[in-house]
Length: 217
Image 1 (cartoon, helix red, strand yellow):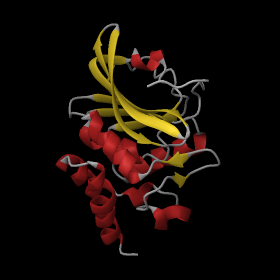
Image 2 (cartoon, one colour):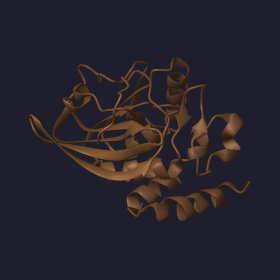
Image 3 (tube, rainbow, N blue to C red):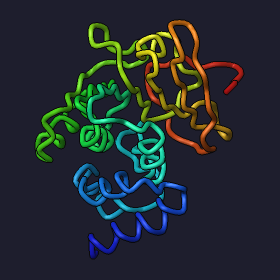
């Protein structure tokens, strides 16, 4: 496989057509090598437009979904970011290139170890991975400028929203199959949040979050 040609095709044929046009995001996808964060058994599928299996219950988000969420968060260099569901560390590495600091949490101990090793190997020094559930955020690290849920949930817990700074943003994929929607929630003030619907998609569930009998966006 010609890796650079495959990377070019991923960006031009999958990601750009999905309205990912921010030059800084497109450049990051060239610099942070996705294949280095994919398990060896699936390395040949690193640039395929699909979620990749990581464990029996966890999947790596499709490249276009990762890129679109990254673009919508609009992370700035002075900001502190929380990522829920670090998986193998790919999105944490992308976020770390844009942020001052990234705190990533991963409930699966094996994946948390992989993410830590992958980030170290990639030379990412401003991102750390904690092996814990993420539904309650990370006590003692709040408030965050941005929070990214790297998988789907039935609903975003209020506890997570409360860890945003005023003006902070949270991106998540909310709902249940076959209908899920990516949303961007912004904290307007101490008790008010605004939500913008971004796009429809389907993504694997994050562990540790409550399910719901009905879904609302």
